[in-house]
Length: 177
Image (cartoon, rainbow, N blue to C red; front, side, top):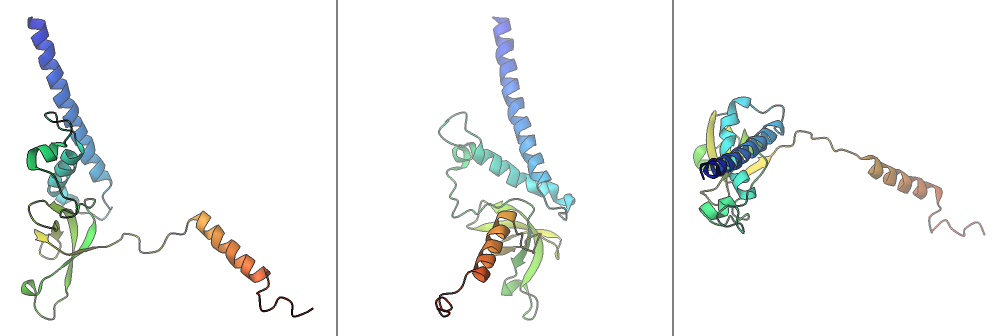
């Protein structure tokens, strides 16, 4: 009887350890996907985002038909809560009450995660104010502004250009006859 109790406790410990390792792996994957210019001083501010996404993805032990987040906090509405990858470089909109009339309308910052308590709001780090803020309107800045041309696309475009120069147009066809 005593060995069965010890085995049961050991199984619970292994399950808890497995979930903890899964959580660490999820957070490490988040950290490795960050842009190279992201301020690593802000890694602690990414924890709520990692915890929320992990709970959304993880199945609840109590009710396997629901996610852990849904069981704890209720169903999440993705139209009301936009979730983006963490650590994106953004421009956040400054409301007229937060700036002077001739100041720039946007400030650079970093996306930290969704604000689950407010409708369509984001948690962002404002570089100018060096503080965390909640905002409604953001624009994501891409790291690579030049378009990428893939080899299959380039070959299709080259074939179309070649065929348009080699084949006669309909107005030229039959003029020599």
